[in-house]
Length: 251
Image 1 (cartoon, one colour):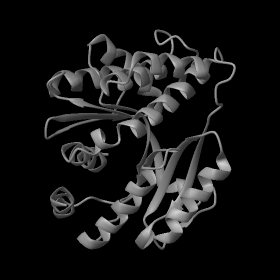
Image 2 (tube, helix red, strand yellow):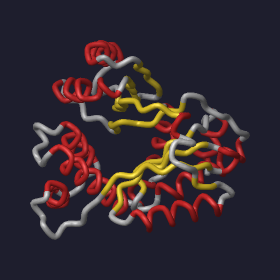
Image 3 (cartoon, rainbow, N blue to C red):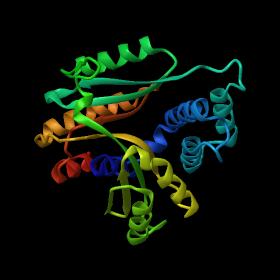
Image 4 (cartoon, rainbow, N blue to C red):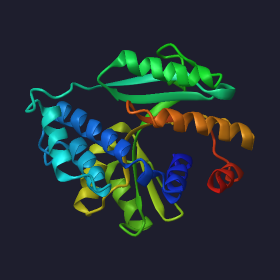
């Protein structure tokens, strides 16, 4: 997961987040709506919703937007759009495996756009199950070490049942089994830690490393997918080398 975290940091440094603020709000609103639909509209009793709302606030999403998204998901907004979560599987350039997480109100549109983006790059969509076996679902949290130092984060993770804590360039990441997600979220909330990223993530069991040019080609495909309104995040088994990171940051 650290590769994706570093990549996200590079994108923030380059100002991509500010340039696409509207797209970020759209993605966050859908995440909030789905969380509210699944667990109710009260963030105090719905930990997934609480995390989604915290993330939206961290991005300075207006309060009215957050409340509308909650109402849309909980059913209080009778005219609201109905969203569903769908995970698509595919291959990018050089056979890199991809799991594409979407929240959409039109699955035909989503699959058409994703198929076009993959085929244009020499990749393809894949049958259900043909890619997912290469990944395992994990609880994942990332936050700045200034909010909680490594030693305290390690103690918290052990208490919650997580199984890995790493720190790199001022960011701490906690990963663990899916069952540890709620306990970790509650303990971080109690410690007043606002995760920069949190959720159930697809982690590759094995990674593939390509040369710099091929790595950058795959990254551009992933970025084009993540720019789609329906796509929340793309997971891949691509290993990001330090040289590739440097080349990406220099672009």
